[in-house]
Image (cartoon, rainbow, N blue to C red):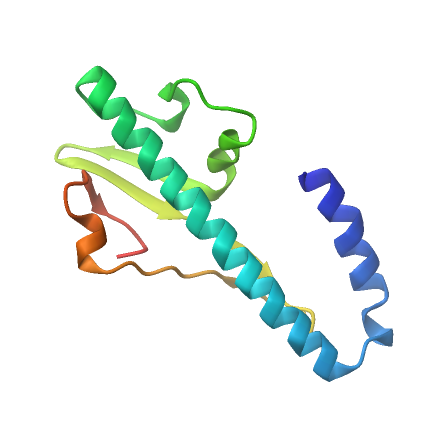
Length: 129
């Protein structure tokens, strides 16, 4: 899937000078929304697999590579999520960059979840808390 997106992004970047500024800003909004939805999905997918590993094995994995039965689609968590096992649980951070068409800058995506979201989970630290 990533291979299909790269040529499209390259084409958009090459033709960016032909695109009106207000359209670039609208493209940025759409890109940010799409990236936020994807980051949310990747983070929750990783969280679910880590917690499932705990249920099946009695402990949290030492690394994401210990997770079992990942599909090809699920393996995308390795690119977008950082995991560290801690003494009292684990740390899980989302790592997404969002390119901008309007300003040509790259920003880090930030997700935030309410306190209720974390109840019953072993994730003690996260950049989404």
